[in-house]
Image (cartoon, rainbow, N blue to C red; front, side, top):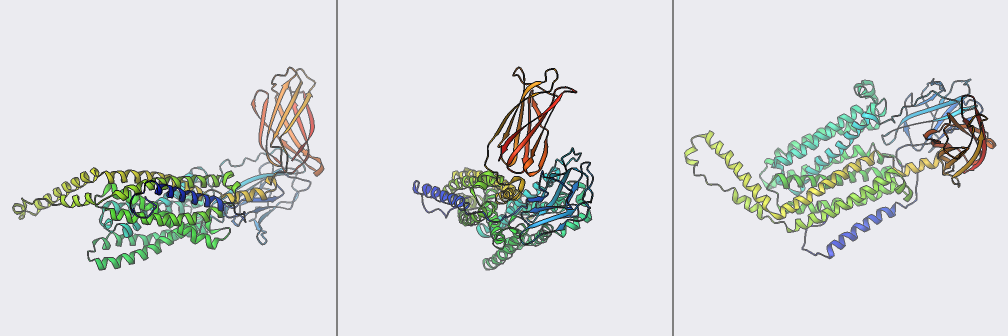
Amino acid sequence: MSATAPYAGPSPIRRPLAAAALLAALVSLVFGLLLAGAGPASAHAALTGSDPADGAVVDTAPEEVTLSFSEAIAVGDDSIRVLDPSGKRADTEAAPKDLSEGSTVRYGVALHSGLPDGTYTVAWQAISADSHPISGAFTFSIGAPSDTTVALPSQAVGGGPVGVVYDIARYAAYGGFVLLVGGSAFVLVCWRGGATALPMQRLVVRGWLTLTAATLVMLLLRNPYTGSGKFADAFDLAGLQSVLDTKPGAALVSRLLLLGAAALFIAVLFGTYARREDEREKKDLTFGLAVGGGVVATGIAATWAMSEHASTGIQANIAMPVDVLHLLAVAAWLGGLASLLVALYRTPDIGSAAVRRFSTVAFSSVVVLAATGIYQSWRQVGSWSALTGTRYGQLLILKVALIAVLLAVAWFSRRWTGRLTDSAVASDDAAEEEPESESGSVSADPERAAQLARQRAALTATKKKRIRDADPQRSGLRRSVLAEAAVAVVLLAVTTMLTSTEPGRTEEEAAGGTPSASAPAAGGPVNLKMPFDTGGQNGKGTVRIDIEPGRTGSNDLHVWIDGSDGKPMDVPELKLALTLESKDIGPLPVVPDRLAEGHWSASAVQIPMAGDWKIDVTVRTSDIDQVTIDKNAKIG
């Protein structure tokens, strides 16, 4: 609905320009503050380093494997597992040791002594301080790389069907909160007569039911969501007990208790309050309900703030109350918008005064949203590169764009609000005056009197609806509010996605701190051409290799083989290995996949450091004919 002050007369040129200027200023301020220098990671823990490093080749078996993270994490007994080439546990299977010092978060596991040479896999899984599960895996080699039979799960922790249902419940919880809090606030602040309207009662009660059901689902699925990924574990009592001992579990239980208080609030709002006729008593009760409801709503909003992004990272003591204000402003705006939509479509009695009061509430909510949103954006993003180069930043841009669209539609709603009169309501009152010619004849028949009363009520409601639908101002307002509600649904979905996405600031911090994904050294694409001759029939050709971007970190590798006639040539086997002899690293094996005739590719090939790398290529053209050729290339 309108996010501006109540209508005070038309100004067809200056008002749109002023609204556009205000919106442009807000957007510029948001993105301008994002340029404030990046600080410590703010949420969603990420692996920032390990010893041994990803892809490293060590001469002797280490005594332990350590992992470093960008922020505090919760670990279990099997949070870090080290597997030998055959898939057997190479660690002692003891709980990870906390090796953290100061601001450095590090955990380690001890390894068995006398481990043989080969490639070992480290798989880890933990829960970030902002309640989101994280996981990953990497390899290192002792002596020399080898084949490994370890098959890591293709499904990341927090994914799969359990993750889908959990995310749906997360979205439903936000939606229920918006309807519960926003609908109640709309009745108390904007339209007190709505307490007796059945559609308004249903809206708020459905919001409460949705939030309660979603919270229960999240509580039950929390154990499989952060662990096994199996629905059956939702009813594991031991797992449920472990969830209750965590910060997210405590937040969900607190939310359920507060929802019990919210149920009492709803009963009073639509019971005692709705039946009050004395204005003085109703005013006192309005104040009491506003205070009590505000406390409950703040408490429910705090259950998100205390367990998600706001609860960890920089300035958490400021971020948590800011997050609570942000959620309450969202509920007042979007929940009030949904209430207004229901009132306009389902009830004939709402007048222009209530609509204008909501216009004021919406304006106040947008001001709070702008202030808190700017702070949250700076805290979670922190730089232009994180804004444009991370998924969180891109979602944030989409959210800002949706808010801009919502404000634009709200401007049209405000125009209709300014033209709205209560003429339809006055006509409704006249329509209620029905002749009672049969009252005398049926007074002795209570059943007949009740039947006629129901008929008159139905007839009056029909006339009210006809008069209401014929009012062009109300029809225009209904259409614009419906458009606002449609945009608001998408906006709420994007906001929910933001809560489960790694913030851009953290993602960049992790990328800058991981040895294998550190800021790449200067370099460029590597292009090599090497002739070969296996000695057999059709054994001559040329190997062409492209490595992009040709820097430290992750690279894409493409190999083409041309026969002696210059045409693409297929071979039964092609293998590569990379060795940095100056640092005694490697050979690091690369087995590319065949894409087309004479063309192979491998993605995410890790180059741990810059240097003069020797690239060995093994080409087999028959069962017995093969050759290994090599060439050096400067990478990084």
